[in-house]
Image (cartoon, rainbow, N blue to C red; front, top):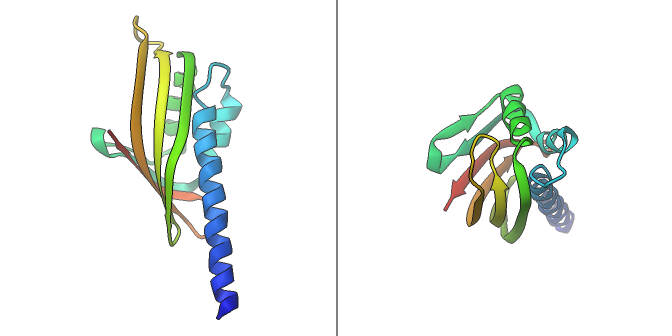
Length: 141
Protein backbone atom coordinates (compact mmCIF):
# COMPACT_ATOMS: atom_id res chain seq x y z
CA UNK A 1 0.00 0.00 0.00
CA UNK A 2 2.85 2.37 0.74
CA UNK A 3 4.26 1.65 -2.71
CA UNK A 4 0.98 2.60 -4.38
CA UNK A 5 0.91 5.81 -2.37
CA UNK A 6 4.49 6.59 -3.37
CA UNK A 7 3.68 5.95 -7.03
CA UNK A 8 0.69 8.29 -6.78
CA UNK A 9 2.88 10.99 -5.18
CA UNK A 10 5.50 10.54 -7.92
CA UNK A 11 2.83 10.93 -10.59
CA UNK A 12 1.49 14.03 -8.85
CA UNK A 13 5.02 15.49 -8.66
CA UNK A 14 5.54 14.74 -12.36
CA UNK A 15 2.28 16.53 -13.21
CA UNK A 16 3.27 19.54 -11.10
CA UNK A 17 6.60 19.66 -12.97
CA UNK A 18 4.82 19.19 -16.31
CA UNK A 19 2.34 21.96 -15.45
CA UNK A 20 5.17 24.33 -14.52
CA UNK A 21 6.96 23.53 -17.79
CA UNK A 22 3.71 24.16 -19.69
CA UNK A 23 3.25 27.59 -18.08
CA UNK A 24 6.88 28.42 -18.90
CA UNK A 25 6.24 27.44 -22.54
CA UNK A 26 3.03 29.50 -22.49
CA UNK A 27 5.09 32.51 -21.44
CA UNK A 28 8.00 31.79 -23.82
CA UNK A 29 5.78 31.92 -26.91
CA UNK A 30 4.89 35.55 -26.19
CA UNK A 31 8.26 37.20 -25.62
CA UNK A 32 9.93 39.97 -27.68
CA UNK A 33 12.21 37.39 -29.32
CA UNK A 34 9.75 34.47 -29.60
CA UNK A 35 9.96 32.25 -32.67
CA UNK A 36 8.00 29.49 -34.36
CA UNK A 37 10.16 27.05 -32.35
CA UNK A 38 8.66 28.51 -29.16
CA UNK A 39 5.16 28.03 -30.59
CA UNK A 40 5.98 24.42 -31.55
CA UNK A 41 7.35 23.74 -28.07
CA UNK A 42 4.14 25.11 -26.51
CA UNK A 43 2.00 22.99 -28.83
CA UNK A 44 4.02 19.87 -27.96
CA UNK A 45 2.27 19.81 -24.57
CA UNK A 46 -1.08 19.07 -26.26
CA UNK A 47 -2.43 15.67 -27.30
CA UNK A 48 -3.46 15.30 -30.94
CA UNK A 49 -7.09 15.13 -29.81
CA UNK A 50 -7.47 18.17 -27.54
CA UNK A 51 -9.80 21.01 -26.65
CA UNK A 52 -8.70 24.53 -25.64
CA UNK A 53 -11.54 26.64 -24.23
CA UNK A 54 -11.55 30.33 -23.38
CA UNK A 55 -14.64 30.26 -21.17
CA UNK A 56 -15.20 34.05 -20.91
CA UNK A 57 -15.12 34.53 -24.68
CA UNK A 58 -16.87 31.33 -25.75
CA UNK A 59 -13.88 30.38 -27.93
CA UNK A 60 -12.99 26.72 -28.45
CA UNK A 61 -10.01 25.45 -30.48
CA UNK A 62 -9.68 21.75 -31.33
CA UNK A 63 -7.44 21.81 -34.41
CA UNK A 64 -3.65 22.05 -33.99
CA UNK A 65 -3.08 23.60 -37.42
CA UNK A 66 -5.62 26.34 -36.67
CA UNK A 67 -4.15 26.79 -33.18
CA UNK A 68 -0.61 27.10 -34.58
CA UNK A 69 -1.68 29.58 -37.25
CA UNK A 70 -3.20 31.87 -34.62
CA UNK A 71 -0.10 31.65 -32.45
CA UNK A 72 2.27 32.26 -35.36
CA UNK A 73 0.17 35.28 -36.41
CA UNK A 74 0.66 36.70 -32.90
CA UNK A 75 4.44 36.58 -33.43
CA UNK A 76 3.89 39.72 -35.56
CA UNK A 77 2.91 41.63 -32.41
CA UNK A 78 5.43 44.10 -31.00
CA UNK A 79 5.97 42.68 -27.50
CA UNK A 80 7.63 45.06 -25.05
CA UNK A 81 7.32 42.58 -22.19
CA UNK A 82 5.14 39.65 -21.20
CA UNK A 83 5.51 38.15 -17.74
CA UNK A 84 3.59 35.14 -16.45
CA UNK A 85 3.87 34.09 -12.83
CA UNK A 86 2.31 31.08 -11.16
CA UNK A 87 0.42 32.14 -8.05
CA UNK A 88 -0.96 28.73 -7.06
CA UNK A 89 -1.26 25.15 -8.29
CA UNK A 90 -3.78 22.60 -7.04
CA UNK A 91 -3.56 19.03 -8.24
CA UNK A 92 -6.17 16.33 -8.72
CA UNK A 93 -6.08 13.02 -10.54
CA UNK A 94 -4.67 13.89 -13.99
CA UNK A 95 -5.77 17.52 -13.61
CA UNK A 96 -4.07 20.72 -12.50
CA UNK A 97 -5.73 23.97 -11.51
CA UNK A 98 -3.29 26.83 -11.99
CA UNK A 99 -3.75 30.44 -10.99
CA UNK A 100 -1.48 32.72 -13.00
CA UNK A 101 -0.88 36.44 -13.21
CA UNK A 102 -0.05 38.03 -16.56
CA UNK A 103 1.56 41.44 -16.93
CA UNK A 104 2.13 42.51 -20.52
CA UNK A 105 2.79 45.46 -22.79
CA UNK A 106 2.07 44.65 -26.43
CA UNK A 107 1.24 46.44 -29.66
CA UNK A 108 -0.95 43.94 -31.54
CA UNK A 109 0.00 43.81 -35.21
CA UNK A 110 -3.57 44.64 -36.28
CA UNK A 111 -3.92 47.72 -34.01
CA UNK A 112 -2.39 51.18 -33.84
CA UNK A 113 -2.28 51.32 -30.04
CA UNK A 114 -0.10 49.79 -27.37
CA UNK A 115 -1.96 47.70 -24.81
CA UNK A 116 -0.59 47.29 -21.30
CA UNK A 117 -2.50 45.11 -18.87
CA UNK A 118 -2.28 43.04 -15.75
CA UNK A 119 -4.74 40.20 -15.45
CA UNK A 120 -5.31 36.95 -13.70
CA UNK A 121 -6.33 33.65 -15.17
CA UNK A 122 -7.24 30.27 -13.78
CA UNK A 123 -6.50 27.30 -16.01
CA UNK A 124 -7.81 23.80 -15.53
CA UNK A 125 -5.48 21.46 -17.36
CA UNK A 126 -6.67 17.89 -17.88
CA UNK A 127 -3.96 15.43 -18.88
CA UNK A 128 -4.29 12.14 -20.75
CA UNK A 129 -2.54 8.94 -19.68
CA UNK A 130 0.60 10.03 -21.60
CA UNK A 131 0.85 13.33 -19.72
CA UNK A 132 -0.35 15.42 -22.67
CA UNK A 133 -3.06 18.05 -22.38
CA UNK A 134 -6.41 16.81 -23.61
CA UNK A 135 -8.56 19.63 -22.24
CA UNK A 136 -7.49 23.15 -21.27
CA UNK A 137 -10.07 25.53 -19.82
CA UNK A 138 -9.00 29.15 -19.40
CA UNK A 139 -11.04 31.25 -17.01
CA UNK A 140 -10.10 34.89 -17.61
CA UNK A 141 -10.73 37.67 -15.07
